Image (cartoon, rainbow, N blue to C red; front, side, top):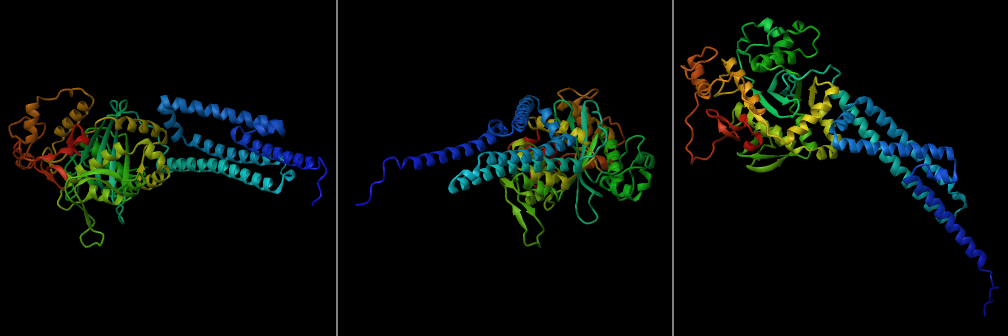
Length: 513
């Protein structure tokens, strides 16, 4: 029979275990307090001066953050400014790094205040694990936030310049969007597509005015460098609108102090053709565009006819089959640029549909989820003269434009003879398109029947410039289809070369895409 332990011998052991549990709970509590309210552990058990500084710093940042979120919710301009100000982004980046280091120090100090050496081995290991998890989780999250802020700041610096802001012209910002090939020796030399986005400075209502790359015999903005060289218009044999950049680079000495003489010459030509003052320009690398589409998870497009992807001799050659499909960057680029079974003007219509889809489908939520990929793709895709100080304004206008119909005007046949364009007619058309977008009648617009007769190439109709028989033949539309006939589709776009493409002349681009 084993000996019976003396009465009361278990009491010291029970008391010891209870004390161990209390010390363990205290150590864990100090770390949790540091997580919830940084500095509170020091206020209770440590250096109160450090605790007060940390607590007041955290509470001040918390109040400032809540005010910023609430203000941004009611006034989006604050958020846009904060996200585009390189100075504020640098301050925020350094602040997040300092906060990460400071919080990590408080966790380590809270672990010290928990007196880990007085704990049992299993409790000591548990405390080290909990402290390490909290320390690295919080500091890691803050350092990752600093990295994201740094990416945004680098994106703003690499993408946008420091030039002066330009005031809106007649209440609108006119931005020339150019698409350029990235092939050897071609990037920035021969724009493949040119579209003026005319944006209402208050409402964001947008009109897309597209110019064909093969336009000839057009004037330049009065008083410009190109106007001095070609006072009677750009009549260089065998050269078109998209050749202005090449011509200017070959004569760069004429553009004193210009960093982009090719772009400057193109802008001067577009201003002369449309009668609009161009505020800013952006050159899009069409090959880099693929990365942007992939970064946002693809784009949904309506495919009306099989669209070839690649060249027939390539192993990856295939067709995008008809239907509503989500296309990746590679296929989206080919949807916008495919030439087989198409023409330049059908292709222009498809490009507008891609623009519309991107504007409507890339929401702020999608942009945030894919922020780093979008920033990387965009900095490699776009060059622009838009100053950093204006980016927040245009982000705000873009969000406003998402909720509105996009109008389009394309200066192409049958309305315009690209070989001998009627510039006065183009100016009227541009003014009328903008006026309709603003909900007003264009000043001095001639009667509708007169304009229609001029558009049709009627030799007897009054026009602002001389009309040749070739102009009439090129601009005479085909007979309209019977009501029972299905809408024509050419090269994947609604319409035809003779009657025009719906996406090129529309009050609601989304409805015809």
